[in-house]
Length: 276
Image 1: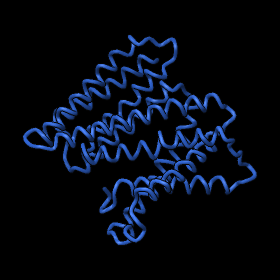
Image 2: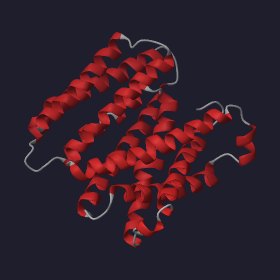
Image 3: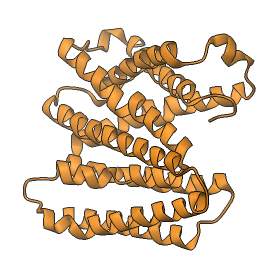
Image 4: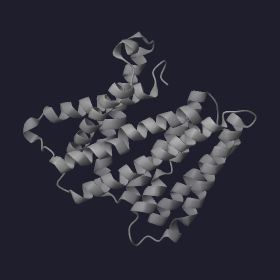
């Protein structure tokens, strides 16, 4: 949570900003806009749930239940899944086995360390397990999004990466508004809570940088690289998520966490090498 704001409010605010920025970008140059047909609009709506609002909401609740380290590493396996499911026909599964084993060992070690630290002598194991389940669902959601979005862009080479990002943003913004109406706090409640400016700044930063700008760059990469190779770019997100979690906790990683993170990174590097 950010101060006294819940996950639904944070998710809806971030992606409402994403939708607003995308809408402004579209209508700022109406003469150059290529309006989507019905098929494209439905594709944008579906992908917006998989890659944005649905993914982020699942991950946010997963982090609330299981902490930051384990969900970060679970999300960090997305490059591996994208490599397995989106790999070129000539890339054999056997070549990817070392990377998969290293990554799996790193995740297992991090989960074991986090479980021991948080729930080794008391209750709360069910909540921790629920958090892991939610993080796994978010990982599946984004993996499907990454694969389908890459396939869509490569099949529709006439689509501009920025235009498609804007349409994804508009679809996501509409979904965010529906989410807020269905499960978010009322405007009166939001205004009465402290930390309002922090909430606004996080929504603006997340909506612009982590959503709109990142989606444009991701679409450009998806058009120029294979899905399996493009997926390796997400490694940076995992590493920064782990770094942030330790800074937030105000501590250095323990020995188990260092080894787990190292195994994880080595697994990703081995996967990239196999791809080459």
